[in-house]
Image: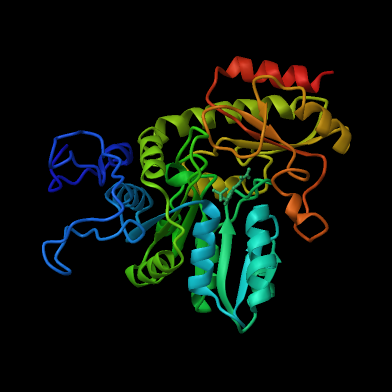
Length: 385
Ligand code: P1T
């Protein structure tokens, strides 16, 4: 699969080949890390498509084509972090006086961006339990321009019906943005379900190895892509060529990694349900999860994240997250190794005291792809003391 005239169609094939033709100069089968910051022009404005490294870079272009293809998007834009991607999207879509609806359990960084960075510039916002379109309708104002959805949500693993929210947003002229970080395009493709924009923290499953911070925006519409691309070039939140290479390499194995994440997470969730030290397990794969049916409909698998409430409350949660050995106590998620964390004090500390504050008994697991028995034994020993 070397010629660009061949159009690979399967997901895993596109993950490995889309945007990644063999290098025309050398035949190298892997996209080179192009470090050049500037590109020679034959005459003024006559060039290969690349002029200056902030505006565009061949390694970045390969990543952008690949992930845009996986998301079924018209255009993809790689960013230096998930937050830089979110910032560019929201600035392109909402200005002073405009109103944004965010989930009532959004990622803490999204909440901080909206409430502490955009709100002081005059952007208005409210949070709503987006699992219900009634709650979305109730939050609506005449100035609502953007609906921001995460599904599954971080860290409560709530599920939002993307197609239902898209219908409400579109009948009222707003844009639907879906943060697809937890699901990845392997498990869920929001644009096919009606979303206008998809964002990622590619630091997570896309990169997949805890060795790169990155963000991604995929848009259904070229015109919106132009606006976000203009802002990216004007502001400069671009990823380095090496970071693009790392994400591109990670994406090649996304499908096989997600399959294993899903298998391991399901087994972990089932084990936790039976454990007396656990009060409640949050995982969309459990039939008892309120979003299970919607997740089964719009996702190909239920993902690698599992959260639970420690029966002994905050103190028990803080103790057990320090006791695991295979699960490393650390922020972030979505990589091959298993991580455990305490959202109220770690990833979601910025939401403390707000309507988005997280239950202090909550523990979040990013279930990795290690040997399942080792993961189960590790959690059991941490919970059983
Ligand atoms: O960390 P960064 O690459 O800037 O991405 C921000 C972000 C956006 N969206 C979601 C759903 C996220 O989970 C994140 C980052 N989250 C963590 C670091 C975390 O541990 O939850």
